Amino acid sequence: MTDETKPHRPRGLRRGPILVAGALVVGALVAFALVSRNSEAVAEACIPAQETLARLAPTATGEVAAVSVHAMPRLAPQIAFAGPEGEPLTLADFEGRTVLLNLWATWCAPCREEMPALDALQETYGGEDFEVVAVNVDTRHLDRPRAWLEEHGIDDLAYYAENEGTLMQTLQRSGHVVGLPTTILVDGSGCELAVLKGPAEWASGDAFAMIRAALGREGG
Image: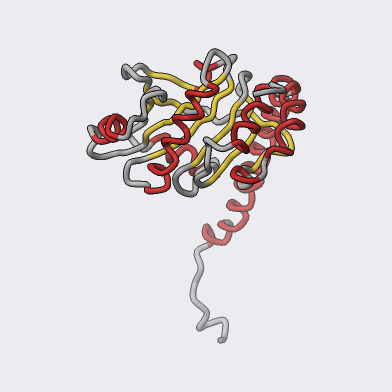
């Protein structure tokens, strides 16, 4: 192709790659600054959680072998949902209490299958220092979740819900959620300890041992 037959490119467009590269550099610098601030916050807030992780890691076996225990604690994602009476809540409202946050929906068969086990876990260990926070994320037929829980005798779990889809979108963007169910273990300081992408037998001895480790309990 000769110079005469080459397509004409406006001068302004020739700066496009330079502008894009500059934007990427700025974006990277901003991301680095955010990561740095988050790292400082984690270092300060989650130092005690490192000891918890040391206890927790060996318990990811058997029925809970798929639970991914973090090598280092991190700040839990900032999420919002509704409480049993429709009151607005965030994880910060559970400060001082270890939380097993579980996302479930009535259309999700594995979710339905593990709900009785989560209910049993709450019955066994639920109290001032621990709670299974099962958050329903259905976005249609919102009368079904409560009805399903009642029908199947799930009565130890408090009813939490986020039915606008915002919670799922937030946790998908953060990489926590690729499907349902998803479960996140968070300590009383808001430090994320572990994530499970999929179901588990939460009423098993293996799961009970993991929760005892998270709570720093030696016995049952």
